[in-house]
Amino acid sequence: MERIKEALEKARQERAAGGGVAPGRASAPADPAEIVYSRTRTVPVLHGTLRRNRVIAGFDPSSFTDAYRILRTQVLKRLQKNGWNSVAVTSPGAHEGKTLTAINLAISLAMEVNSTVLLVDANLRAPRVHEFFGLPAEPGLADYLRTDTPLEEILVHPADIGRFVILPGGRPLLDSAEMLNSPKMTRLVEELKRRYPTRIVIFDLAPLLSAADALAFAPYVDAALLVVEDGATGTEELERAVGLLKDTQLIGTVLNKAQHGPGEDDGEPRRGRLRRLFAGGT
Image 1 (cartoon, one colour):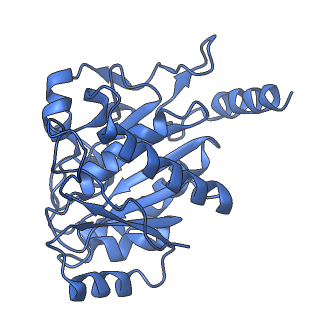
Image 2: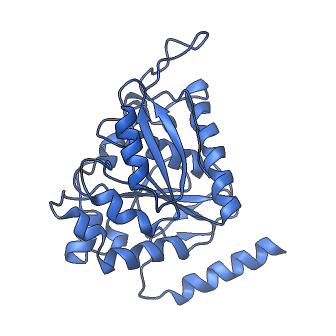
């Protein structure tokens, strides 16, 4: 009965949403585990491209995909416990694996039958999410903020990855911190978080120590996840990054790019592997 009420309420909201922002609008199929997107572009993605870029949708079940499922479970527990539905993924510095972590976490969450996931490339200084899916650089969030490009024209659903939509970053912006802190972006974040009660929104942000973007944007999300690189991120860098997030709910850290341990399959990707999946957090 509760699910029926939720479905009816969702349908009412969609009918009433006439000219408003309608990110990822979908029709309700017979199987509630499936989503059929009617106003979001579905684009083909090559399995080989996903595997080459270490996106878990390109892999059969393995210890590599299990690592992200464990991360998903940990994140989901914290979100449900606190009634949250938005997470920013960032790192102290560049090349520590935050974008790949955000992508794989989002896809893992989308595998949950009760959740749909929107992945937002909010690293407007250097947007890269589209590259991992082999997609061209097309209009995205920057164009929505700058020129009012409708969201329904820029949202993308990668084919064969169910319940998952990407809001690409679009063209790089030099004033990215200002745009992320603009009233228009604030309104968009609230819209994305509130429109659908079962949606989880993952934001990929710029590194904390190289730009003001993540710090400017962090207050608008429920929580943050910090990605650090095994053997590369220094203690001082980590402490500075955590200090910058002192006013944000830091739900945990991910140790990325760890070398595989004894007994793990040498044929699986070594970079991108998670060894200590979750440490600290609230």
